[in-house]
Length: 544
Image (cartoon, rainbow, N blue to C red; front, side, top):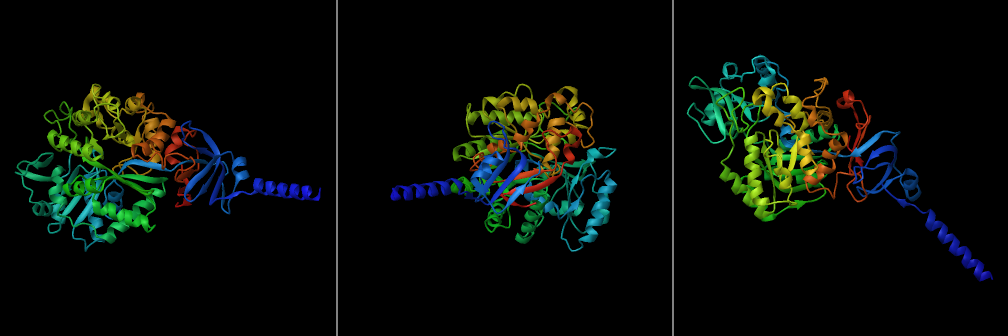
């Protein structure tokens, strides 16, 4: 009997401790409204994190009954979302741009010149005067600037000022001379704007390269500073992953190096610039992916931008009757690139603004994709797509990667470029969503603001920062809040082949999440852009 009692007590004690011993984790977050963005779009109120990953998500009573942690965050009812992903940005270029003259929002050519003059005075030792962000569509004349004032102010120092979309630039005579640009210069996919028989100073698309290639490359230390500056600002708006559209190998190597030494915590999906050297290297080494970096795609430029009339259109510009824009390569060259991507297993992501560019690339994609597939080739921007071409996205499983703030930035003048009928085929996000049931959403920063909530607002409401127009711009192409959130989380991850790593708050995935002060799923429309970030977390660690 004594033995029986002893073993009964021993068994009861073991059973008790086995039931009450809790698993130690690194962090428990509770008392929130947690949008998991899982398959059922379920809402939880707590989760546990261990070793940089979510280990449990659900009801806080269940979480606390099984897990314990020295670090516990009480959200006090605040909303939580998976870390935001920008599906199309220029992260490194944005960082470099923080060090040049800021021309965003300049309301006249005179203001542009004055900002450049002030910047030059502050940086007297710079070999080049660089700037970015001007947009002639904000000016009363809406005409391109000229180099006249720059020539008088800077006769002996080259100046290169990039338009907001990166598809046009204003340079002075010194820069033209260094690039060997004259009135007789011509090329495929580029244009030198003339006044009479002399260069005006404005270069379009491929013509910019003649001058930009003369600008000294940033040093490794300058590149480090650029990446860290970009990271700081991106974390402040809730971004935990960025897709950088068009990087060189040396920049990708630096990003990887900085991620491994933990100085760069931003996760990056790198689209590679398709130079012969880059293709030779990555086709040999193959696809690369770890928790922080994915390299499995190339960024191709199909045409230019609508704002600089470089977008390739099927019919002439409504406000420039003899201008169709242009492709940046011959169709045969695009076909050869597609063949290389297909044969080497890399994703092809092509910038297409005009309806002609979209048709050309969609048809080339079709040649290799043949039908439904899981290769996830993307059209970046998909800005003007004819009704005849729209079904090709579904037929060939092509992902539209779009930037909603382009619609609300361009709506003031896009109709002048396209005319009253063709404008209805532009910025058609709902129509594109209906094809494959998904959109990858981004900003194209620094062309647009880095804040993903601006894109959320533009996609859902189709209004500008002042909530104009009253009914929204082409409101038939609004998307829902749920679709917009998916577009900047799980669908963005899918477009990157990263859906098993991120994009939702689920056990096993990287613990990237963002806490907001107000809920974007329920807040009034006119407050969406102003909602503040309470905290940004990467791998369960607070980075903002």
